Image (tube, rainbow, N blue to C red; front, side, top):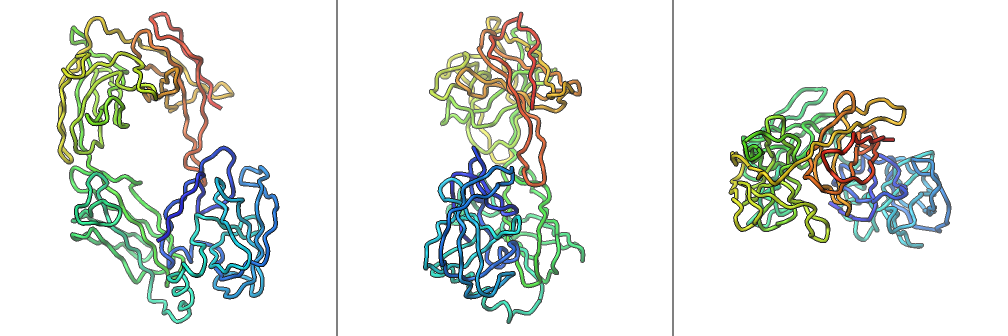
Length: 443
């Protein structure tokens, strides 16, 4: 399989055009027998000439492009028999492929707006490096339609392989994998190698799902859609699991009264003082539970996040309620283990302010479900997220005196852009008992 990286993201389902101000990271492409049927055209061609041009991206913004003129030597899928013109980016950050005049390539291209497009995120390659692709394409007419193959390996993200397994992560045995297609549902149990395979499948769309073993969770969606383009095709989909370790406890004041809305961080001792993305916000009972925790030794506390230069944003407080790192309790967690850390006690001199706010759409409607975070003067996410209710209202607890601004993000995914949404932010303010209602407009 090929893996290419650039500085901006492009999807195989869309033209590989540049997106202004967006980064582009290529996903790992599948094998030749899969990618051959995903794209709209495949051919071997020699570059005759390359012209500079412009073309609109999916946002109708004109972008500089290159139009590559090919002499078609071997047309495999939906390619003209003599000549094809293919659009690609300029290279660098726009995922454009750096074609050379007189070089010969196998080209995998999508059709967008009546034009073929390609880029570095496809399997397009010089023929000298594409022996597997050429073998598949050239022998396709001799292959019988015996049914497609869907295969993959289930791996554990949280462990490292000691035996040189691919990706450096060991396989997971005993996983129940199910593939549901129009013709029926099929089951496999992974062996010691973590592999599964379904064969004899007709063209169409199937759904792949796997049940994580006890103490683990799936890093991907619960169900994956698998498109099978032809009875001679294949699809490869590796599945990733992680340990679902959990750390729970309560955050209370010196009188053991619960404190809601406080962000509790879990930090690997080796990585201190920066959190590792493991956190939870306390509920009305002061309780929290941090899920999906890999094995390791951790520190638990509030206000553990720092600026990017490692300067503290607010005074840290470690379990069981101490300010000095050397006095902090350590939590050792095995794979999939659950630990009750007990009470994290805020001393009387540590005050948390419950800041209230409201998130509205540009038209004044409540932005229900918006995720709100607190950010430092140095633009470091410090606390949250908390979720706005049906009226757009939210409450977030912040240490008294901290200088922050709040940001809100309301996800609005589309078929082409799962990350899409609307966002907004507040002005910078100091958290005090007199802090007024903080308004945020997302647009």
